[in-house]
Amino acid sequence: MYGALWHILPGPAWVRVLILVVLLAAILFCLIEWIFPWVNSMLPTPDVTVDE
Image 1 (cartoon, rainbow, N blue to C red):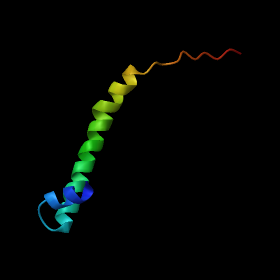
Image 2 (image 1 turned 60 degrees about the horizontal axis):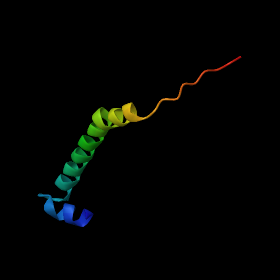
Image 3 (image 1 turned 180 degrees about the vertical axis):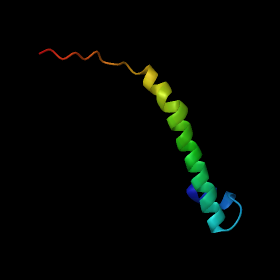
């Protein structure tokens, strides 16, 4: 899979690496900005109380 992605990307090796870094940053941004908060809102939150 990674080999196919590497061969699809245009340009010399340094351009391919730059494109992959930008794609990885975009994917991480989308995960942190939208996916993780959506999943967190679906998880149950425990009601924790501390008794002394």
